[in-house]
Length: 280
Ligand code: AMP
Image 1 (cartoon, rainbow, N blue to C red):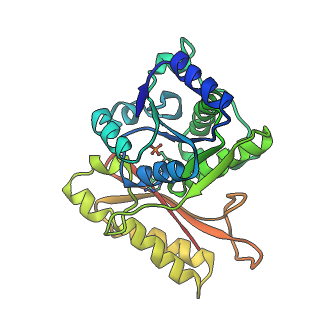
Image 2: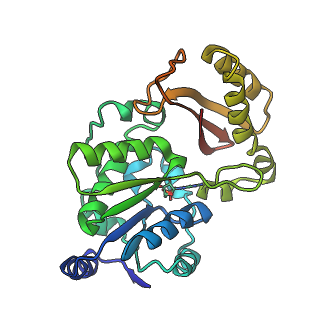
Image 3: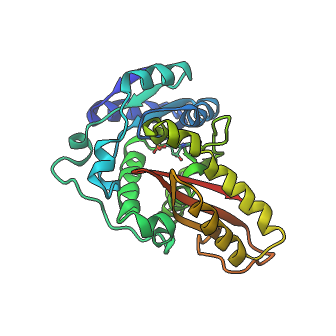
């Protein structure tokens, strides 16, 4: 496995791969890798001639300085984990390498997908995501790129970017990996204290209960139940819960049989923000 941090070195490798008609699989990550990330990388290794994992904590997608500064970094261990998947290359650029002096996000319009849920609560988040993913796509020219359903809105936004710009890239959505107690794996879980970690599986439990409840109840009732159940939690604070149309991500107020829905949630455990979602 090659580890590259300079764009120039990466470009030379990509040029050679392209001249040999190799398929390239790309998995963008922010590091502090866990089994969820590794499942994406393993899928890429299975499906492509050459796989690239990027490890880059992208400053322009963080709206809170504190969140960026506290984002876990475990590069040495990450490289060991990626090596075991038979991934071919890890790209670990610095912020200067990716942005030079211009540490700014481009403004994107993803047909309104960017204004829902995470877009409402994390200012300019998806401009940052769009900016960095577009840069990685241009640099690595992947045949396929892998994104987790853990960040379902991000997945839909990347699919939108690719279709709007007619990029010749297939976007592959991958299922959410969970701890045994149901908590969605996340790099941020490592920052939870013991009480917060013990409470955090409630997030997925509440999503499952909401899903059950929706079978016999209205969306309005499920929303009310969710607000109420989080009032009883001492370690967790509900930021938002929404049932939304999977395609448009717009908030659903009543069920229509022709549409597919998903429930989305963001919860704070202290200052640590956790997100999850479930197909309904
Ligand atoms: P991140 O490092 O958090 O930016 O995540 C990198 C990629 O891994 C994104 O496409 C995420 O959606 C995906 N990912 C993160 N956590 C999980 C998980 N628990 N299961 C599946 N994919 C995940």
